[in-house]
Length: 297
Image 1: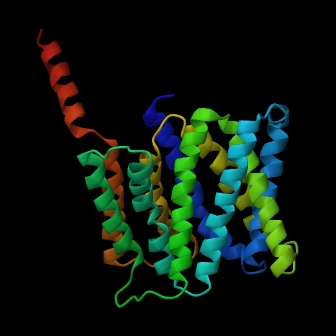
Image 2: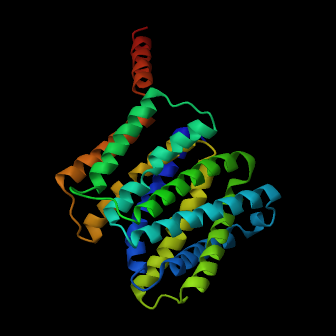
Image 3: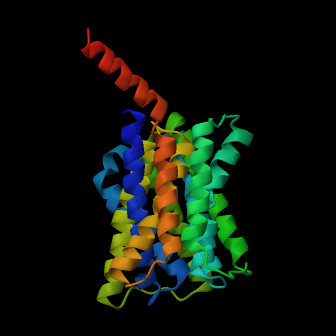
């Protein structure tokens, strides 16, 4: 698979996760955070496991190791963001969660000694500024839950980088599915310890839980694990910067939320940042010149 195809798959996953905000909001109306995590990833694990159970029986120790590691990180991502949302605004949480875009290349540079080209750096700057304009409002101040949101973004960045490494050493499909089971078990343990577990009691809650489990988790995380065999963690993190844009569009269409002029400019900057980093304009122009030159021969 070529990198641009892998990036398109990551883009599809980003769309799934952008819609998850709508379903999480519906789900949290009747379920507590850890309860929702347990149900979401439990359903995802069962759905994906039923489809590929024969392959899962062949999972190696390396597969199990990375599945355990990624499952813990995955639980950390969602537990932290939900704890953060209890004491900070959704705008602050959205921006701080999107700091994954910053953490991924920084951590990759520090621990994996990878280099950032100028095109990618410019794309990152555009995306970061765009996320800020899209999610932060005037006179916004940091609140106590912001630390949880930053921790969630850090967990997600580590998850992306670790997924990239796991894709080279383990079976991506095994890891993508088994990590869901680990996150579900941790969610169950925490909901038994701190909450009162229950099943959804409304149609909208069931729809949200099933959508989160099957589409956003089972399909999303398995596709991410497979696609990252053919693209870099930095590219993955940058494409995920589109998530707040998707979430904003979903909010406008289904929750009748509004977006300011600043928000529209921010969304455009995020799109430009991703496009700038993904498209090598100079190479495209060189190819066009060569094509023109060959047509005259």
